[in-house]
Image (cartoon, rainbow, N blue to C red; front, top):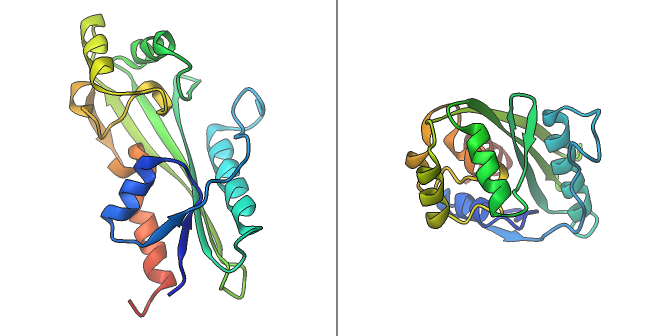
Length: 195
């Protein structure tokens, strides 16, 4: 069975793969991610997909025969990118901006099977629509005491007390966490039809 390498430092992506029973190792790609400031001409979908592909290529240089999975997630709301907050004040500002609005969580994924004759590259951008409850200052402060949001796009984690701030979603719940597992598990089964 070909091993899977997760090209990501995200603990949430590791948790999702482990929960799905997919064996993997982690190799963190050493590169600066593109964003709307470095590449303003690109759409949110183009940026997350480009970052995922760049991560796969970086790891494939060292592990050419492995199956490599990489991803990049961003939040897009009313024409604004919402990346990881720099500090608590920016996190508060992001949550206030998202309050009572619907936004999109976009995850670009790239999958490269180094054992496939054709190079085995698959890519996909998953979109999930998330609608926030109206958030008061007190609710935002309560949420920020419960959840470390500094490493989370949009300054929130759906899997951690998401019920406090999220009214409803349309689409993949695991996409909001960082990997659309409906796609990943299908690709894993296709790569291992004997399992």
